[in-house]
Length: 257
View 1: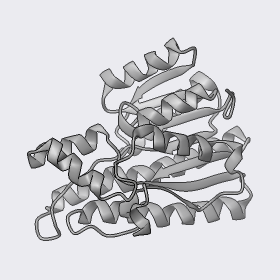
View 2 (view 1 turned 180 degrees about the vertical axis):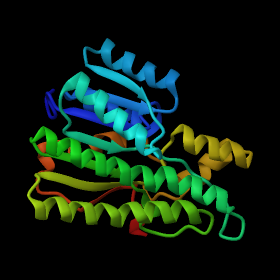
View 3 (view 1 turned 90 degrees about the horizontal axis):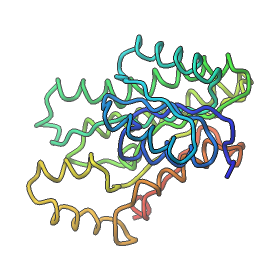
View 4 (view 1 turned 45 degrees about the vertical axis):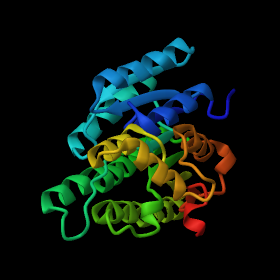
């Protein structure tokens, strides 16, 4: 398979969940992968899986909210692979609690990763892709929560809503400058990932929580990581060459209600 053959991709949050799925599927389609995450053990395991399947990959430990770490990631990517064509800003965290309950500290931490991380990734991704000179695709992970409100996710709503409109601004800039760099956002509904599982554990009953989340989607169940990973492959490939500043919603009908 060669939908992104010989392209170089950075996937943040690539140690688990949606980032891992994106990295694995992009590698399967021929991309050379840079997995970044704070989780070194699982990040290195993803790299090993990619290499076992015949792909090329490296792991870099990264806090996406720190600008100096973005500089190091780009530097090592170029040192290893010499180019950059794809960047998926998949790293993110979730914090529950309504507007009266969320602390300012939680608010700031969540926005620093979900929104600042996407801003820095997009900015440094554009610079690296311009240096490469072969165009590129940046995929920012928003959410259904970047399109609709949830009474118990004010900080998450704010961060993902920010990602949605920031993506459009960056896309228009790149288009008007003629860079050949496309910037799109991807919008998952509830997907069965470690982040969702941990949120349910914190609430007490995982089985009952999963049943409730399944029922929110008209198709009758939550999504799987590959449901989103396939969307990332599409946005990363030339198949989506006429898409920029767009929202790819993969939500089992959630936002159609």
